Amino acid sequence: MSWPGPRMPEGDTVWLAAKRMNQALAGRPVSRFELRTPTLALVDLTGATVVGVAPVGKHMLIRFEDAAAGAVTLHSHFRMDGSWRLSRPGAPRGGGPDHQIRAIIDNADWQATGMRLHDLSVLATADEHRVVGHLGPDILHEDWAGAGVAEAIRRIEANPARAIGEALLDQRLVAGIGNLYKGETLFLERTNPWTATGDADVPRLLATAHRLMRANRDHPEQSTTGRTARGQDHWVYGRSGAPCLRCRTPIVTAYQGDRAQERITFWCPTCQPGGPQAP
Image (tube, rainbow, N blue to C red; front, side, top):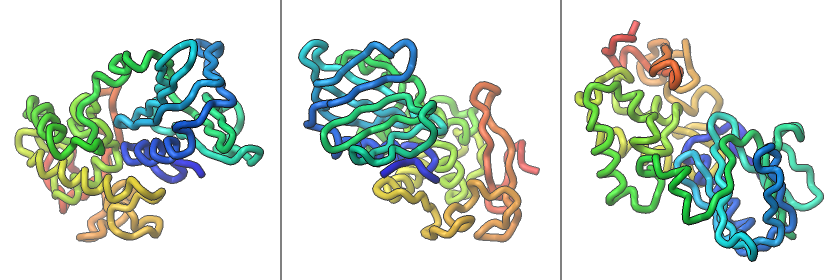
């Protein structure tokens, strides 16, 4: 049992991973605990009990209760290639070579292996705000339909001159949307990625992103078209040069964002006209 596999590690990937990790680890004592990063190599929570596993955007929080350390959280960030993998004791861990393993948490029934994880840290559970407090509302959190979406709209619309493609990826404004769902959402709403946020229908865009991510969070596939065949599962993402599934115009790409945050963007110049970067 593993992920992301072919999935891009966006908010829905982390949500599914956290759900499965919680089912496998919560309420069980840890029989093996290893962190394979120099600054955390001496941390040992063997014997602690996993209290629960929670997703926050692209971050995962694994909470422990330890007799010596008290309430402690292991924080990890998936970024572009991280994953947690579950296997049965004695079964192959999979997911890549051993040198890519960053964390191991085992109990009597399951082995959890963190592969290519970034920003690993261990901190008191009461201090989790230090690693996720900067994030905007989580688009898959249970309170999204209430205070969450209202706050995300407020944060995004606070900078009306910013390109909407950049704003949707800014985890400080709304947590969980990655490059795949940004591109697919903008296509479905016929919005060019370089449209000024002040000219975009932010509530509608967030509603579409939320719908797409909820539809994909409970299974390994990430389809935004309703199809699963390769090259047919996404409207624009990963389809540079291929014909638009709506109008047959070739999908185009360009990089968007400042140098530190620059990401490739996919769009259809016919279905999503305008924008200074459109050919």
